[in-house]
Image (cartoon, rainbow, N blue to C red; front, side, top):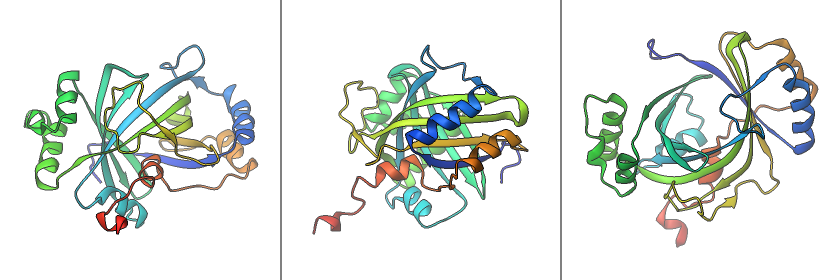
Length: 237
């Protein structure tokens, strides 16, 4: 564990629409809406996830490896106004995130396979990713789309999110294409309910989870969307 990073707890659940409406009503009056949300209380997230030549990120996740990391580029509401390069780190039951802002020019170069734009030792995350692209053949793998409804609380620094309409772009990597053809990643259109907090989880949130019989899940949205793709050439044989 890197002592210079702030680690948080993360709990994930799949909920159906009935459970979503109940939990939302239970918690909405106790939490403040995310300041980034629009008038409907939501915003769109699109992430382009990367993996290496061995598909390390997905195989470690499916293999139950507790300490792992993955890279992604993330935008909001189909806009290039804010573009983040992020590394999500999991350590035991804790998570943290390191991120850096990208220009549209740099992001386009990465999408075009020009990884030299990352070769800047003055920018640690970009340089780290550059090394991964050269040594481990880190490459874009899958686009993950969803609509997020988020609420926050200062007590425990809690953030709860409902991620809806999860879709995948399959083999497409053009993250800025607002007309990108996507397909639903869940057959039953579940909603991903996530709870992130620091030192403690307020009782009213814990009660809402227990009262609705939620079962903690481990699969990430990246894994769910990558399962639509073939990992190996031998799968065509």
